[in-house]
Structure formats: structure tokens, C-alpha cells
Image 1: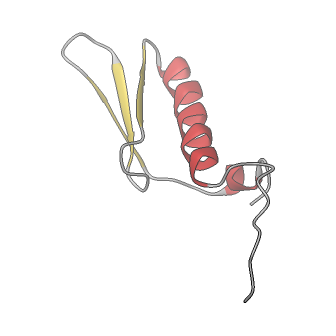
Image 2: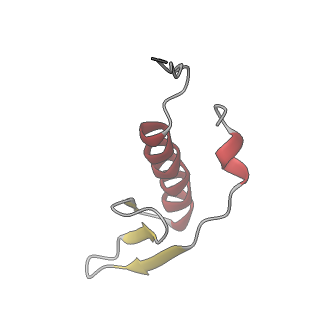
Length: 70
């Protein structure tokens, strides 16, 4: 997966306001991927960044896969 190929993938995101008025988001399809923001705009920026970091941890960019044959 290339550096930004996954940015065309759609993810389901649950969004709510917590008791302090902070927007919270959970990316349903990526276990443990969540973020927050003071405004809706900040939240969406943070969601995109959280997804990018999550997927880059799963599929590191510039990592070559080497297969060893016997």
C-alpha cells in the first residue's frame, strides 16, 4: 500500500460530545483508533491524522518485504 493510497478508503466514524463539550471520534473499523478535538473542524483533522498513523503502523511506508526460500 503506497504512502497515501488508503486515503481513498471510507471509514465509519462515530462522533459525540463528551460531558466537557469536547468532540470525540472512534473509527469503527480500526480497533483502538480514536481521537478528539475542541471543534468539529479540529476533530475531522485529527480523525484523518489518526487513521493515517494507524494504517502506517500496520503497513509501514518504505518497508521492503523479503522472502527467504529454502
